[in-house]
Amino acid sequence: MKCLIFSLMLLSSPAVMAEETAMNAADVSWMLVATTLVLFMTIPGIALFYAGMVRKKNVLSVAMQSFAICCACTIVWYVSGYSLAFTEGSFFIGGLDQVFLKGIGIKTMHGSIPEMLFMIFQMTFAILTPALMCGAFAERMKFSALFLFMVLWSLFCYVPVCHWVWGPDGWLALAGALDYAGGTVVHINAGVAGLVACIVLGKRVGYGREAMAPHNLIIALVGACFLWIGWFGFNGGSGLAADERAVMAIVVSQIAAAAAALTWMACEYVQNRRFTVLGAISGAIAGLVAITPASGFVEPMAALLIGICGGFVCYFGATWLKFKLGYDDSLDAFGVHGVGGIVGAILTGVFATESITGEAMRPMLEQVWIQAESVIATMVYAAIVTYVLLKIVDKLIGIRVSLEEERIGLDLSLHGERVE
Image (cartoon, rainbow, N blue to C red; front, side):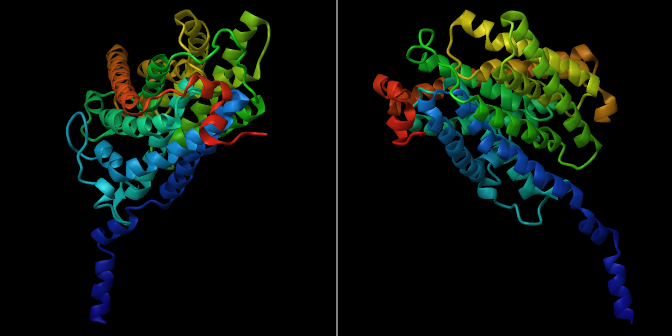
């Protein structure tokens, strides 16, 4: 009897109770769903979104790019990406303590969820980011070059910026930069890299002289809808908890997406006297991009304003700016993700509120300046690293398909397949 009583006392001790309650089942359940939703954004979301917007002869190539990036970045993240991004190291990059996920067991915790779940949630971001970039240089890059470039870019560009913003000792995190779900880490990073890549590669053959209209807007619409739904996991899951903040992140994401879509459609009508499917879905994605860094920091009214600003500015970034400067951003990766990420990151400093964060906020102008620093740093670093990596890959294996291959289409010339 004494042994039984002693055992019960041990089981009810604070240490044992803390161990039993360290994992929150609701948080784990939500993060499993959120992880699935974010992966769904790349395969099939981006794959279909981009596949519907290119010409028919390049449909399989862009879908294959998203699929291959998913596979390659999964291994990169497992081998060293996660460790370099999220372990303590320096202000610039993390350490190698958790390469091959060393030291992360089935019961290792990250807050209220297993660290393995946190790792794979962040892996889906590392997959999504380079996949977004592909839209800028669609229809003209060699698949072998793209594959090598994306592996290198993930390690030398995505991982350091991720550590700066979300790492335990990253310099932007310590400076107080706010990026709830990836305005700088994902969208500005990918958008600027895509812009550099499309300039280095040059314009598509016939650009500006031949019609290059999307071949199937129904496919693009379905892909955009998948992205919209997946964004709930992207933004709603970034707090790593099933709580009121996750609810608010989803609410503001919905409002911003709708506001930006309507704003883009209104701009189209004023300029061209018509509403287009391509414009509507582009506007919705622009709104989702703009709200991403702010989603865990702002209230619904702010989301409405961010969505309107995102839709308006991205419309001109994807139309007037592109044609004014003359670069061939095939599917407006920079015009939507780069420009939208910049708008969202700056406006996060304007609208972030203590009522949502639960923490004391800096004066608005001070926070806006910190946000501007994070935007500039990300843009400069992404541009330089992307340019250097492209030149290295070009020297090694060449980056652009031949004139004949481009005219035939990448589906047949690179993959030996085509859509009937």
